[in-house]
Length: 319
Ligand SMILES: [Zn+2]
Image (cartoon, rainbow, N blue to C red; front, top):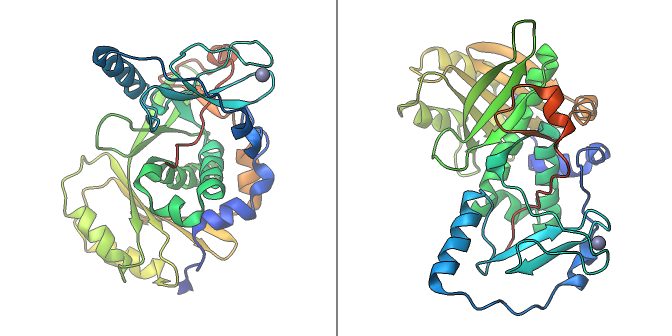
């Protein structure tokens, strides 16, 4: 089988064709581009160097990217849905509704659903343009989450299981984790896949060069390698990759490839071969039923869901 990989970057497809499943993915909706009109021009409170350090550490611990100016955070009003950049004040109230605003949550606190990860990348693409979305280092975690979401949806299609994405915020590896709670009798056990994500980029002709390079390094044997084949215009022959994988010494438990080919996103396990999963529109729509967030480290799903309240996770800043 010889298929030509899609010329368009995966994100474009996701942002256009599947935009129907965006609703329901969020507990909190962005009010649209006009929020800047409500930008608060409050002068930054003078901080001592010690205070400034403490503040930036607090933000870093949160796992949330720092604003351009230390101490700037984006808050959301749960009543009117307005987002606002606020300097200094850590418990601001909405100027119009007078209710307490919600601070942004970082990745370190939550597991996110595949649908939320996909929608987030769409939003970044729409806000900053596809070129920046796929190139810039500041969106790397979101791109890795997007690729991981494709594997999560493939697993869901194969097994019916719901998986959650955890984004690594402290260590260098793995890039992401897939988590699920096994609730079978006597269960309530967390199942985890640790995932190393790599992109097959334009400047590399053969996808095997990317895989070989990764396989040459020492990874724990429980890791999965997930290759995002976003290489436009290059040929991708899954059968050939599967054959070559048999002769390759790989440290990974499994190796998967994600590739957008025409209207379908193919998720293929090439080592050991071979579930082939075609993700189609219906699969994305089905995934949108999953709740957007789960508190990290959750064991009992049902009770945790009741107390989640509102979660606000704005996309990273572009400046
Ligand atoms: Zn308000």
